[in-house]
Image (cartoon, rainbow, N blue to C red; front, side, top):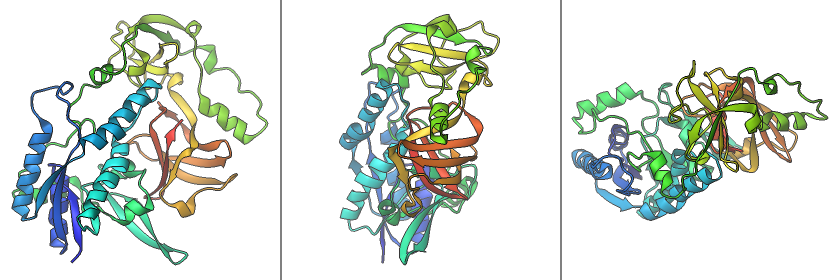
Length: 395
């Protein structure tokens, strides 16, 4: 009998995943990860991880499977929290959920599971795993979940073949309502539980306060750049090569204070991200102000009015070669090659038509349509059909 360790998070998805595996004849063990808890930054007195681990325990008892809690807070702090501070300091916007899957759930956690004699690790992600043969060898595919509304393959875009080989996604064929229905029939305590929001396992955190513990506030100016700024209409230079053109397009516009008028003050450019419109506290504009650029070195924030402001849009982004990751290593591009894909730059965004171009200088993703708020430090993931084949950090 094959043994599976399920990451029971205290939510409905992982509860039903555990039940389905048991039905399929696996020997199932439930493991709750206590990741990181710092009372000084959680919003309310409720202790989310305690409540969650309790729910996970109740589910395990109901399903009749062994259960234990593992404390990964040390690794979590080192691999996730420190990474976040570091990224923000550089003016990049990290994605802790993707990192948490790569570094914690499918690495630290997986090693613990395998040390318990597990053949597989399972999670409650809405995605599916495929297996094909390439040159006589098994190759694993990361496929979109059946529930188009909840497809979470994007969050797993940094997994490797080794990690996928040992992973199972039992609810990938189901929709969220079907999962809740199963939980209700089984009378699981998690059946009606709301989906968890917020940082992967940190609980409810106020991000600016969380960041301020390490990043000192620094007052700076907020500039508003006019929709009709000449920078948006200037002619493109003539390029010697496609590579030069893509490099130019991916850079975006560099702003200086002369490009805008001062509309307010902020407490530190490193707290803000492109596309953000909340938290600026600048009133009196006809349309909402969106951040179109931040300059961490000069501590300036540039904004524009309205979701259609030209400063928000770019057609091309770059991924450094050492930050490009292929789940399907057999499909990785060689120098000078291109590939037609569909891609997204954030979770839940509809897939967009794009072309990948691989050069010595990096991998470029060129979209057919300009994309809003391409953000440095976030992940771009690319698909062929419903298979996610690779991803990278936007540089």
